Image (tube, helix red, strand yellow):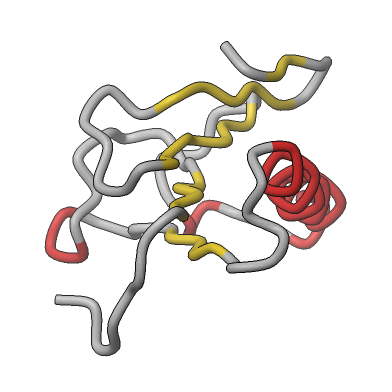
Length: 97
């Protein structure tokens, strides 16, 4: 666990795809991105701000990082709970796969 508050947790990915790879997970359950509603916008905004804070703490401030939210199985979602991947510490290319 690298962060926990009343609404969000963050922890290192068990199958990292980059030197820095952690997840930000809301404690409120959403199956996927499609389950978000207008009332959830502040929570999702906080998740993005937490990504910035933790990325800076992990020395990614100069080189940058990638945020990934997979939505549905065909897009790579393997866990039915919305989460944000934060990846950094290496070069990334586009398109991603």
